[in-house]
Image (tube, rainbow, N blue to C red):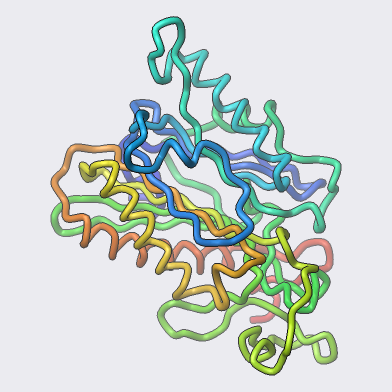
Length: 320
């Protein structure tokens, strides 16, 4: 096992990073199709094809998920993933064509790099073509290239975050993996020690300060942060799940964000978690959902620990 989401059979990951513009995208491919679900908790999401993932809708299998920077502009990269899959003959058969189903979610990174450079069709196409089932690079890569956390005092006093991934194989043989780009308004905490490891920096001292403590003494928060955050993630498992069950797993996995990001799911965040079921192994939705939250929490920590400081922003590695 590589310790990442590609440990789940049927899952590949491809990433493209623009280091100068500080943006990028991450593509999670499931070319044989996967039962898909989603849970959106943040109040400022930027998404595509999420309605068809809900129970009671016709299409129950997806062929890839896109996570990207670039704010709403970055959703264009999903068209590149579709183009790549169409060339491979992969998609939902509608008789006259096969239509690849590629849900997507974006985060806001325009303030840290070049706001005129965003993930587009070409970047999505390239990332899909690079997808492999091996090790996944973490930190300042893909959708996490321009990710930051701890925005209470503004982007200049935030810290650099990135992309992280993790996996766990249960005694039953079922594997659960997670990949996440962490771009939260709130701070990030170690899920094992509950110690803050990255977040808002005090403008006066440059030291970490807990956003929840500052909020407790504030009467109001302006709308300057609206739409500029978002943590986006994908959970995958080789257990056989129904569409209802995979949506429940996505919902339960959000607990992993609640354990590691404080505050989370605010009006300023667009937190979105996708879930994919690729296999035929028997598994309890209660166990898989519980473990998905654990694995996602680990992936969030890795997104912070693996990140490197850029554009004048400190990272976890800089303050140790």
